[in-house]
Structures are given as C-alpha cells and as structure tokens.
Amino acid sequence: MKAYLVHVALATALAITGAASAQDGEALYQTHCAACHQSEGQGLGTFPALVDNAVVLGDERELVDLVLHGRAAMPAFAETLDDAAVTTVLNHVRSAWGNDAEAIDEALVADVRGESDEPEPVEVDLPDDWFELGEEAYLRSCAACHQASGVGIPGAFPAVAGNAFVTGNADALVRVILHGRAGMPAFVGDLPNATIALIASYVRNAWENEAHLVDAAMVEVVRGGDDLELDPTTPTFRPGAGN
Image (cartoon, rainbow, N blue to C red; front, side, top):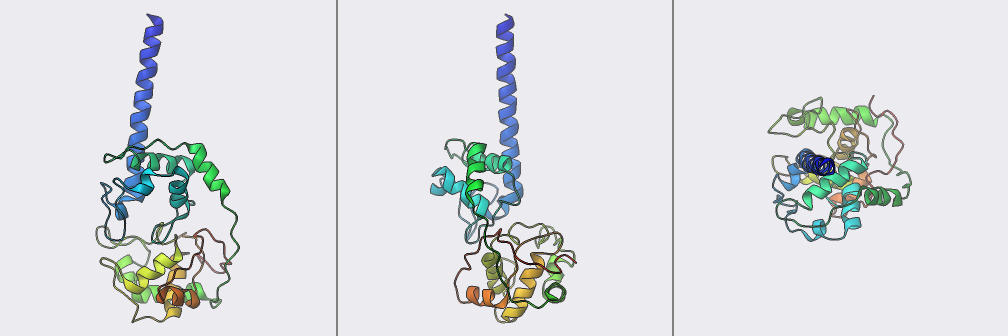
C-alpha cells in the first residue's frame, strides 16, 4: 500500500510539472513570439506559420540555431533567453496546434549555443557623437509613435526599448525603417542613409538595449536589396552608448 501511494504521488508530481512546463512554454511564446507568428502559430505576412512547419518539426539543431542566432527578419534570442527558456518555448511550438515532434533537451540547446565562435568586431564609420545625433533624429522622426522613452503606445505602436527585433538582425531593422511594415511608415524616400544609420544605431543602444552599430554603408547595402549577414551578437566599439 505504501509503495502504491508513493507511485501515485510521483505520478501526480510529474503531471503537475508537465502542466507547469506547458504553461511556461505558452507564456514564453506569447511574450516573445506571438507578435510575429500570432497566438495560434498561424503566422502573419512575412512571418511564417509554425503549424505543420517543416523547420519547426524538423532537425532539432537547425531549429535551435535559428532561435538563438536569428535569420532574415527573425531576431536572435541568444542574449534574451537562457537555455531553459529556449528549450521550453521550442517544446511548446513543437507540440502545440496539432504539431507532434520529439521534445528538445536543454543539453542540446547548450551544445548549439557553445558551437558559436566569438565573432570579430564590426568596424563602422560613425561620428563620435553618434548617440546624441541618433537621439535627435529619433525624436524628430520616430518618437511621436514609439515615444521618447521608447515604450511605444500599447495596442498601436510597439516598444523599441527591450525589443528583441530591434536588437536582433540589423538588416531586418533597417529594412523596416526603409520600407515600413503594417502601421510603420516607410522612410526610404525621406531620410538619407546616414540618418537611418544614426536612428538604427541609437534605438539599438538606448534604454539599456545593446547591439552592434549601423553605418551609412550598411544601410546602402540593405537599400540595394542585399543582407548584411552579420551575427546579431557581433561586438562593436560603442563609445557614448546609453549616455
């Protein structure tokens, strides 16, 4: 009888743990992923559906690498989510909405994270007072919607402070500034490359954000339709950032 009760208690504990893990996975997904991929994984425009998605259900290492390091418009979460959080949210999307794929182990996430070589610093051509100039340009062109403090307007314009998309792939951010998206206007014909570079560099380093800088040459590459192919975690010399 005692052994039976122990067995029942253990089974109950495991069930509760599993339910809590599933809830945590859904909460992480809603916080970090649903804005682009939508609450039910149905996707939106350029953001693919996660339901019955070959990448989501396919090779585990490829999926983990995508979430950690980003790709195209997909931001990198290596600096935002730890191994446990990445594991939990991926196991959620691999088992939600009718998806049925094997669970990912946290050790695999740690292994994929450890494979990344430390990238070389990126050299940029910006004035010494880029942060102040970037703030001035941001206040002129962006603050009416995203607010001077970067907190946005809930339900209308997203916050840029603490936003993983803003600090993720630089080319994706520059592309949105140039061509707009949803309620975001396009500045491709209104602002020169140098000003867009200052704005991008500012929002990526203000309000405790931290990401490598963008210069006019990089903006020109994106304006021409090409990708920068920079690691989102690439270090850079950031004088004056956050002051």
